[in-house]
Length: 183
Image (cartoon, rainbow, N blue to C red):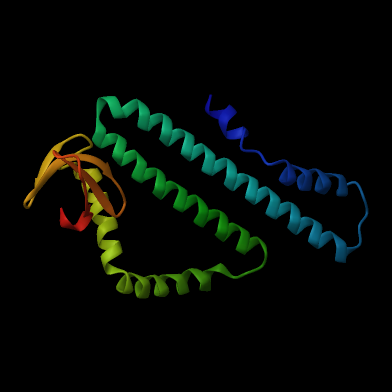
């Protein structure tokens, strides 16, 4: 069961912090002590939520991937890419929630990240080109795992479609690694 596997990712130190927080609610603590206790409990809750969410995405992607691999290799590859995007969104959301709850103004941070993102995009054009090419390959499916392809003078069977590269096995057994932009 998915729920069993997700809850298996529970970390006891984080639960201990949450239990201590619940115990502190029945105590009358001074204000200078209450704030760190609240912050520690919030951080423990967010970290445990992140672990559960990450594990849920991983379990779901793995199950769906194995189920679809036999039927449609293109869908299996696409779901792996979507799993990566889902984990990235989860980490971003939890990070922004943590920063906001600890009193950091995230509106300016998000605007700064947008501007910084443009600078990083310009600096990393080749990597981002391969990433977007990977999304195009997995969504458009010009080839899927197990297909025999010819790319220029090279030919072979597609073994892996990653975020940056595609691995092709030649008929002679050698492995060729292409950047996704090459396709």
